[in-house]
Image (cartoon, rainbow, N blue to C red):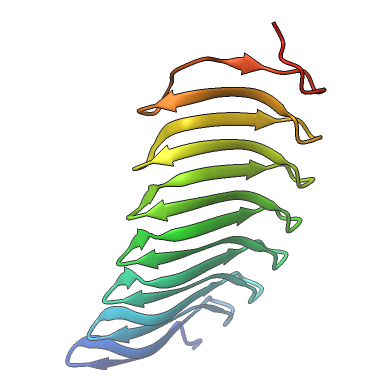
Length: 173
């Protein structure tokens, strides 16, 4: 028969490297365990053996860098976790490899300027967040970099003057 799981138990719990295989014998995931909890490197592969996800765990909680990949091997998402919470800069990409989104997390909540980009690479919008809620300037842009619309948010709701501009940069009335 085909091996489905290859690993070691100690005192009734998973310990060390565990490899999981599909019915056709292809490696689908690898994980390191300590006393029955994920502790160390964790990787997931698709049916063709291509890496889809790589992360690290401490005591069953995400800890450190996380990367996910498109089937074509291109990076899809990268970020960092601290005790199972998003922490620091996260970047999401289009399948072409172009940057799609960039945002910063503090204790699992978006904090600071969240930027979205078009697949062709221009800045599409910027939203400022505080403690996970839209708070402050919100702007959208034309391909030429000129501001298209701008307003502000307070407590996750649009609040304040709303301005719309022509592509030339001139304010519409």
